[in-house]
Amino acid sequence: MTAQVSELERRAVEYMKNGEFGSEAIGVNAAIIEQAPGNVSAWVRLGRCHLEQHQWDEAVSALRAALQVSPAHTVATNLLNEVRKRRALAPTAVQRATSGFTGREFALMEALPAADAAGALRPRIEALFDAVNQTSIAAKIVAARQRTGESGTKLFHANSFVANATGHVFAFHHGGRWEPQFNLGWFSSPTHPSDCMRIGLGFNLSAAGRESDRATGQERILAFFEEFQRTLERAWKRELARWMAANGGFIQYGDKEPAVDLLPEQAVQRLLDCRSAAAVEWFFVGRWLFLDKVDDAKLLSDRAKLASLVDDVFRALFPLWLGAYAGSTTV
Image 1 (tube, rainbow, N blue to C red):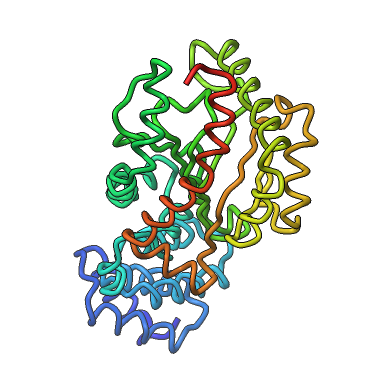
Image 2: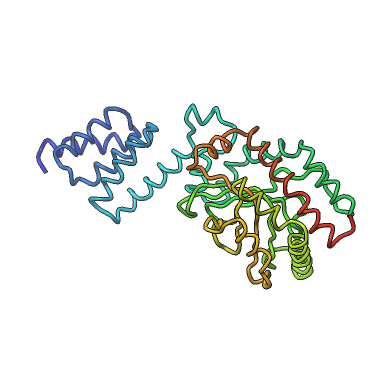
């Protein structure tokens, strides 16, 4: 190490000890790197400086350079993760103007632990709940449940969404654990193949969970699913396939991603053919929005338009839901 680099190193360490991460600290570390490109400590300090200045892209570049020099450098790895989290939490001016779900919201699900991501998304999810709860179809669903003696005056209650794993947040209507669910779900990549949202009907056929009535609850939802199949076969087979073809509809089952490779008729037949629903554990049919599709991204980012779409989907699927629900209850 030359005398000049040694002096620059001394100054850089002094800046760091004093918590000074401004332009002078950036300049000193950059000067060290210019003369000693393999100085991993200078790259890490430079990354920290850019992090503190909210210069996210520059911080990422510096810390990646540090990891190229020393792939197992723990401090560089931890700082890089911190940059990604802070960048996800810091909306741009354009993002602040949106009211729905943009790349930022999906990035939050990717970067943050499940519980933290749910907390960060809470204002937007609950604002969407409020808008959906005001629709006439929400009132119809609530009234149908009330006629069977079920509780609830709103379709979605505040704080009723769940994030059990990183990259996935979902919600279902109040009281819907053991019923055909009016379901909303958000998925982020790379945990999942794409950033997307689902809107439609779901059947959680698993007995897993903390509910005390898991055994009887599973029997109930299996009976609902069988009635759903009968309703589908009797009156909805062609209608559902047509709706899916016209509205970006796909099914989802088990722990798989949306079955975008199935034609609507094939997807409907898959629902009808299942004879071991408890083993599959999850079935869903509805509309999917993908962030990488321009028109879908516009719908996702605008809460009013997204709420209107949720209304349209729930309204279209309501007769199918009611057929399944009424077939196993007295409505």
